[in-house]
Length: 388
Ligand SMILES: [Mg+2]
Image 1 (tube, rainbow, N blue to C red):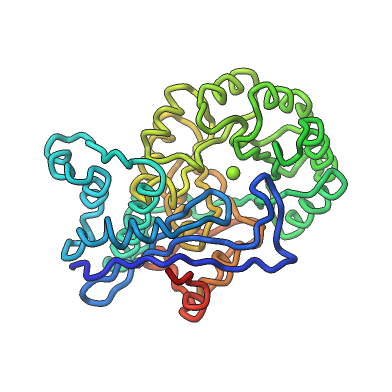
Image 2: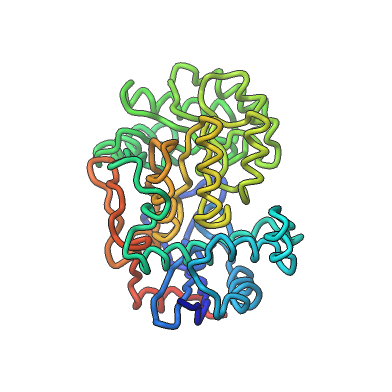
């Protein structure tokens, strides 16, 4: 097998007005992602995704340039099945082969952010290709599914204290046994977040699992105060409670509460996650395949979670490509216990694939289709591609 082409397109799908929501990221009117296609000489296509941001919208022009102009050309003619070798070479730039010979990483200076997201998109496409080449789902290449089925939680929860119970109850009525709501800076005051969380618990009753997510917008004192005010809510986890560049703050919060702390959707490479674990800052690791460095790096984070005996819950808020990629990694890990399903407006997850990813009775079955199991609707690809 030989790589013949590496292509990237910025997809921008409009979110219908009635499905838009407002959070600390503002009102989200579009869903953006970069779709990477790696094509072999025989015409087989592998798909990967890179993101410019953890929210839905973002400017992806630079990601397209990195994939098509900087990383892609060096892959032409290479065997797409040498996935880890390709990852190390992309990560280490001109020192890639030297790093492989020495057995350590000699990373390029631009080793965080868009560069790693772009590496990850190509990496995920190579995994998709490898699965298709072998005629097996990616999860089998990762050691096979540890779970026949995983429960899912509905991810949303933006309404105020008056409406949050009804919003989350709609998710429960769809079959979900767990739901996640947003808190933090969007509420302006900690007391407002607390009132919304308590209203949610009151409406849901004791048996539905409830998570909260602050997108890293609480100060440490605010996070501690919120934990104290909602102690009776019996939370499943508190996600990204404190500033994302200060893992020590999350560690300090974790030391004061028995509510599990979840972090990781905005982190880049396994090295960021290793720092989190060294500081004992998290109980749940949430790599995003489209940001952390692809399936190769998400799998390495899964291994870290398995080693540290903490939970793995990949961030699955993206297009169908990163959703499915994270899903395969989760199914391959004994540390995964629950999957995220976005209930926000997301045309790239629900409309872009020929067949919408299935969620039944609040859970997901282990993937069985070759590769990632993603086939895009070509008409929507054309309609949603941003011309550059
Ligand atoms: Mg989150």
